[in-house]
Image (cartoon, rainbow, N blue to C red; front, side):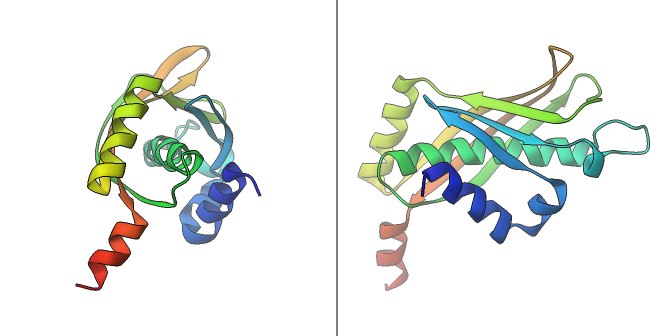
Length: 156
């Protein structure tokens, strides 16, 4: 099974809200990820995407990037959203599509911290577009923990 399929299954099975919202990791490669969700279950009273759904899609986009990049490096991490700031620039009137990515240099630093400290922090700028314009920008920080380190620490 591919890492992207493992993450899709994990999100669908372990986070029921995401299943209801229709959030799915659509693409991953070259340290970039695309997460999508249909407008219909995420619509608000104005007929546009609900702000909470946009936040959720954006948060899961950065989470997916963090998780998948570490899986590709051979790890089974535990990833949490530590901090996020959102800017709603314009309404989203179509299906939700969020993207983010990091440079190889950023990933190398992140991976080095993860390997030496057992945890690392990754910043991601997630963009949700509508009609070829930036509609939502989420600046978020994720903390990834090495499960092997967590298991060792749990015994103390």
